[in-house]
Image 1: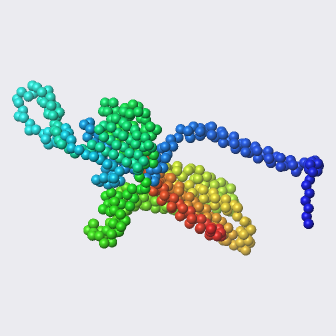
Image 2: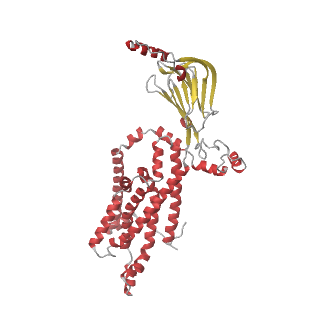
Image 3: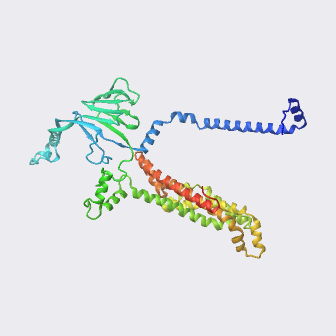
Length: 503
């Protein structure tokens, strides 16, 4: 049976008096911990002030960030409602609209009417046979010029045309815009907003602007924001629609493909039992060709550039490992007993790794021109310095007993390194090389953006357009998949080399 007793306050004070060092240590540790926490807090406050983090967060345009994020997982259809001076309207879709030619979406409703319009006459009608030149025509050149101007001004004709009289656009059921008789009516968030289009005064809102409408100055265009469903710009001569839909448009077949806008069942029926569309190719080969050469997504080019990135990372890391391997023996003090040679080799490693990979990529891009060779050279130079340093440090930390044992049996110097050193460091060397191979797959994407080839350059080109964010998302997802695969393979190989079980 065990018993426990509580010490009285007097007994505690007696112990503290006899052994003051017991309490002194714990008190000093508490003071040290408080000072460390206070130092970290002061540093964070200083960083917040020095980098103006509060002001940056306040002035950040989170709406633009949200639009960019929405563009990653959606696409826009951008028809324009063009308004002529006589009030005639026309709905025009971009040349490369995701809806293809002759677009008639169900979310655009139009009403038409017949209207007499004064339009410019065709050029052929304006050409009149030249009158015979008078012998005295040189005396009145201005009369001839005035006559030609009168003819040009009169080169118009009246026609009866079918024009759009009313156009209604729906934005995912949450908003709508109607254009009729020089007026634009927008409905969103339970509010109705009316705008008048006056060629002399510009765009005039009726009443106060709602929260989702902005106009910089009176008479200028009004921008309407409908959240995730899209936005629009209202001007006197044009209403620009940006209607957003979830998903990636035409990811498999573009608008030029005969398989465009067909269901999966229709495509499979054409491939298996349909008549040949192209006499030179089977329907299956034609479908695969249309997928690879999709003009909007450029699958083949993206996959080729991704393969270039993988090859750049592999070849650059492989060459760096091969070159760093013999040099590390020269840098290790316990292997090469020569201080000058040790320092020269280590300084070479410092030089190669102190210059960032991105800087090396810029240098080699100027030297070799844009392409994968510049990227491989940048990875090779940077990793030679880093791997050489890591390999040398691993050699300097080996157990000398194994090497001395091999040396004691009279083995040659090369055999001592082979049987006394390599078995200890080779798994470490291979593990570090595998890690750098996996890491360089990501780095090769970054250096590709400066012209070093691979998918990085294509990614940068898509970002510069500021409109192809769904293509950016596609390439980012491909890069993530490759990195995840390489990371898993690298971890499995490193675990096997180090004698550990994979989980």
